[in-house]
Amino acid sequence: MRRYLSAVAVGLFLTACSYGATEDRIYRPPGVAAAEDADGGEELYLRDCAWCHGRDGTGTARGPEILTGTNGPAFMDFVLSTGRMPLDDPDERMVRGETIYSEEEIDELVAYVESLGTEGPDIPTLALEDVDLSHGMVLYQENCAACHSTTGVGGALTEGTATTDGGPGRRRIVVPPVTKSTPLEVAEAIRVGPGTMPVFNEDVFDDEDLAAIVAYVEYLKNPDDRGGASVGRIGPVVEGAIGWFVGLGVLLVFIRWIGTKRGDE
Ligand code: HEC
Ligand code: HEC
Image (cartoon, rainbow, N blue to C red; front, side):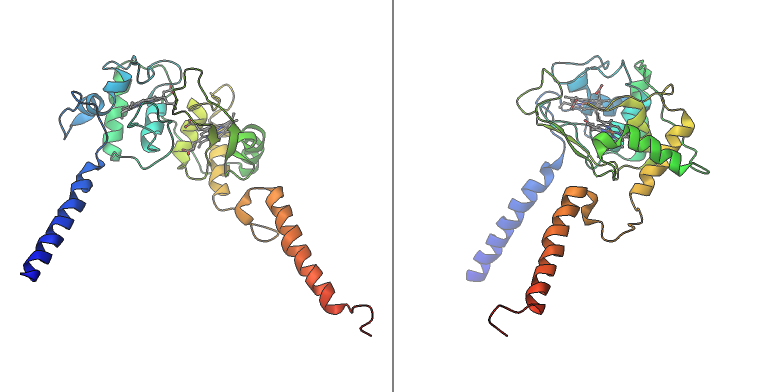
């Protein structure tokens, strides 16, 4: 009897666990749920994006239009491959995450939204051989470091919200690190300017400049730390603090150790 009961208990427990496991699909409001296994860009778009961005990409109260400005293949590819879209909730901010799509699905979605008539740039082609890394460094330090920090680890931009119509869920703007992006994502971010990031088009950086910056960001993922430990590469305050507490601490202990107290002689 007892064995029977414990088997039932285990069974119930396992069902309870698997109940939650089916709930990891992306959220869609009632009535919007469409075919689960969407096939091709149009079906994917209608299933996952249309309820916020509109059937034709012109936007709804839940999401902005995605046709004008720098919206286009590069921007679409960027938001999909960095997992920024789709959101589960219109009040969420778009942040980097795991993408829910395969490369093929991303290509199909990009092509479909482009067919709705977008204005923005194409997915850039990068020629990363023979780039001038030091040129890339200069451009990066002049144009990107102010926000993403000299080492690329990111930082805080401002308190408050990016948009004046920001809903209650909008949090303060944090600049993400650049070092998690693939070379193509870096190039796309530069060309489209996601969120509050400025746009750097061909008039600002030609394709050679673009490749040089991308190559420098690649280098930042694995820089050789001359001068010792990197301590997170978040800058002089941390380095100073470690200098003070560790360095001076050791010195003080050492001085105590070699010194003698007055009267000890
Ligand atoms: C729950 C609603 C929602 C869903 C679903 C959604 N989006 Fe979005 N999307 C938004 C919101 C809100 C923003 C603005 C986010 C921000 O600025 O932080 C946005 C921004 C974007 C942008 C950038 C637009 C710009 O000019 O900044 C693109 C491109 C985009 N979405 C594409 C998509 C695609 C493709 C899908 C489907 C795979 C999708 N979105 C699904 C709400 C949604
Ligand atoms: C004014 C501040 C600012 C400047 C200058 C700036 N960025 Fe950004 N960047 C941002 C913000 C904010 C985001 C996040 C945008 C979003 O998704 O809402 C971002 C996103 C990115 C991303 C995507 C990172 C990720 O997590 O997926 C890359 C890559 C990037 N920037 C590279 C650059 C490069 C390279 C430059 C210089 C050419 C540059 N940025 C200049 C503010 C800035």
